[in-house]
Length: 178
Image (cartoon, rainbow, N blue to C red; front, side, top):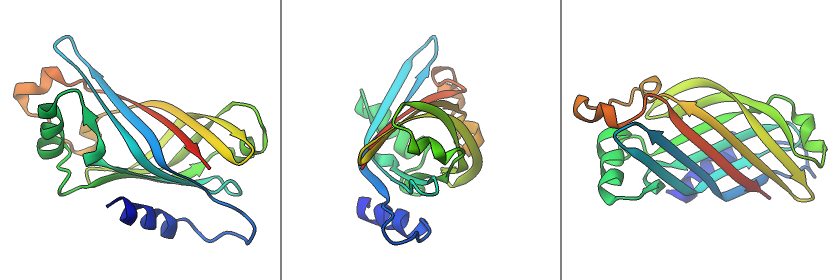
């Protein structure tokens, strides 16, 4: 599954001039956190695939849903079977562009934005968020923090557990692309 996602990312990134190099990670980290008075839920995926073209600022990210791990196995089972339906919708993706790709030329941490299309649970939405980029020789560190709403992606939360899952889920991204 990871190899298929990596191949998809490579094929969806447009061809670039010879000599230019794409930066890649297969060990990006995405975590999410839901906090309510009844329960906190946290999950983490340490096998996120991402490709960045530093010449154009184009970026593609693929995240296998079954690779999110929770504190309790039952939470993981409910997440995969009842909410995101991982067998039917195995991955979440983002394809877009860094709004100001010139920040990649600097060697200091800077804030910019990324915009594109995020697809989760088979639903695609235009998406824009702030990111922090730290370029250095041969690598770029990308960090982001944003909120998403499960209802925006047609993820149904059963009434019986609705009070245990926040309406807005905090998502954190941390990737080192080389």
